[in-house]
Length: 206
Length: 303
Image 1: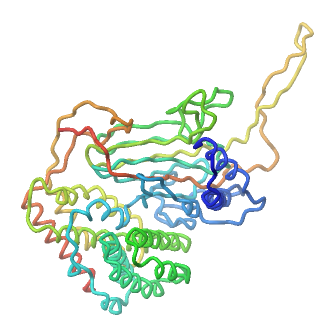
Image 2 (image 1 turned 90 degrees about the horizontal axis):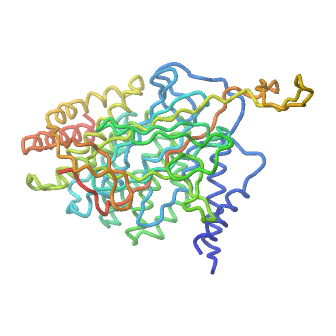
Image 3 (image 1 turned 180 degrees about the vertical axis):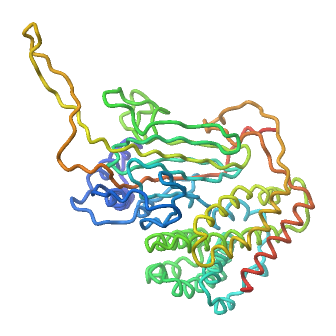
């Protein structure tokens, strides 16, 4: 029941797209903010205008006694080509260090391998899950969420063929710089979406 | 399976809005790159801290802060900033910081089910918003929503939170992020003032007192956020007004607590926060209380 609902919602999301989009503020992305109980939308959520080739930090204070769920979303223009690192500023430990998606040609990701690319909860799942990361502060802390938006590659791999010495036609992938006016720097939105709830139980530090 | 078409329709609509929000920022040649240090760029209006790094400080709203403590504190209207002071705020700084103060007051009333008071503070915000160029936030639709849902505590909380968010968004679109910083400062101080003055006496086990201590993290983010805009009118004044609170927080001890070694909770949430705990003594509490009260009085009395 829930699976069918998710599929329909997913189709709705992908189908409703105007061809020409008016320029809008990235903050509009948060207009869809909704959290299913017991979760509550956290107003620290942020959707920021970002550029490829740049780095961004989001510093997020977290309170003890709450549990937080963080999800990331990025404009398609970035092709999920980002790296997200999260540092717990109280302990200075890196708690997350993940790419937006797995390299092309990789099998489907598993949970905990990506921060943007959807994965299947189970091999038999028919729907995909968008990555999320749950945190339960044992002590109040701040998370430094470091985002690196990779430079947009101006190179494409092109299949070229040639005859080898033995008369065999061999194809191989060669990098070719695009000369089609593609921009080297692109602009898009990157969203840090935060929801919270009172912690059921946090294994406390004594 | 029975489909809930209303939910589906709403989901489709908000999905479209979300995708518009994503797609609208899509593509286009843009070689702006960085615009140098400490300059606001784009409608996000952030200040870059270095050529290739931009930092955002994500601060809780008043409703977020009160959501944590409200059920444990007794409501007192005496703690609210009187609405008739709104007319005395003439310069930008006092208008902006006290806009934040009144946002906090409205949230405090809303989470405590004080609906009439919440609506009163919404009205003050509406008046002040006109002076800040935020009239669009208080649309007829919002006014109707308030009138319809005035009796419902949960709805009023949602309205209070949505209004705060819409205000932030409108300011971001206008590139007025230093105004957001001022509003955040006023709102946070008012929250702390209300919480700390709701506590009758010191106790080592009072979680509201511990919350005050733990807000040190938020305070540090707030100060860093203000520093980004220190060249903007009124910001350095606010920074100086808040500085004594930094000194008060620095008096709190940070102690190492024993690490049980658990990495996750039973439901899989990652346990973070390290093993350092902020401790607050009765002297610390009294110093914080006096400092916060003095700062709040200076902000709201426009001195």
